[in-house]
Image 1: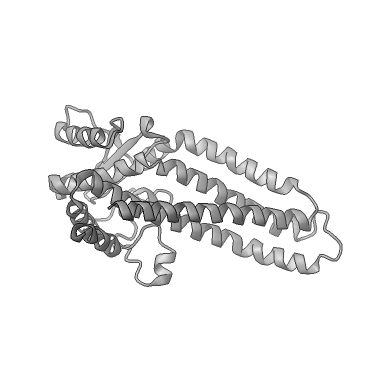
Image 2 (image 1 turned 180 degrees about the vertical axis):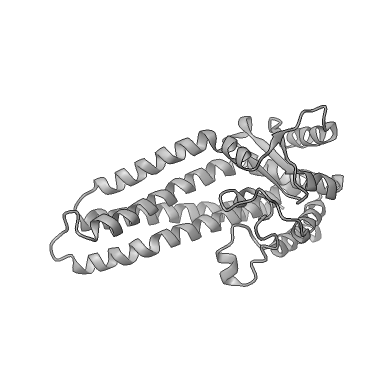
Amino acid sequence: MYKEIASNKRRTFLLLFLFLIFIIGLGWVFSYIYDNPIILIVAVGWSFFQAFVSYWWSDQITLFISRAREVPRAENLQLHRLVENLAIAAGLPKPRIYIIEDPSPNAFATGRDPSHAVVCVTRGLLDKLNKIQLEGVISHELSHIGNYDIRLMTVIVVLVGAVALLSNWFLRWGFWGGGRRREGGGVLMLVGLVLAILAPISAMLVQLAISRKREFLADANGALLTRYPEGLAEALEIISQDEAVLQTANNATNHLYIVNPLNKEDAAVGFWANLLSTHPAVAERVKRLHAMISE
């Protein structure tokens, strides 16, 4: 478990470092072509403004879109005690608990930090999982909270937004006639055009890769918290094989769930499918959890 945790942390930081180098390099190329360093500053500044709004209110927006409601302690004392005990074991404040009245089993965590965190489960999750399996799911979501994954993904959103703004500016304004270009910059213009087209795609792929690594990390941390990886492995299999469709799921929130609600198998069969997925293949996650048991 510790080896898996360390490996995923290293890979996440490596991807984030490469992402930062990539966006700085992209901004430098566009700024150099038009001899205007303000391009990068404006793009990053606007992205940070957008991220500021999402950082402070993303949890409420997500819960509203998901039609979730808070669960009073008296309504489900068993769930509150389960979350409370796992939060104590993880050294975290107890998060608020929300529920989505939907028969499809799934769960997600949101909030800007552990002190303002929310764990949201569906009715189907409570009905279709036993206590051990439910503990596995909750421990996974608490790991997301403890690892500050929401904050990390906000940073990634900033970087992706900056890349998109730079590319959009180049294609819509700079390339088609605006801006002051360096003389003899024909080759650079061609390079800039290629980068403007490919950069947003590359940024999205890095974002997805980091998201997948954080899922692996949360699995490992969750298994460490309960000391029983099999419970989470069983839960993932039940959730992914359930045929009920989560009605409130959409592309804006699907990456938050423990299993992709838009493609539960998220089978990520093959290299290309995995590359474009927000979640690792469920089969691969279960395989890694079983490997922890054998070790």
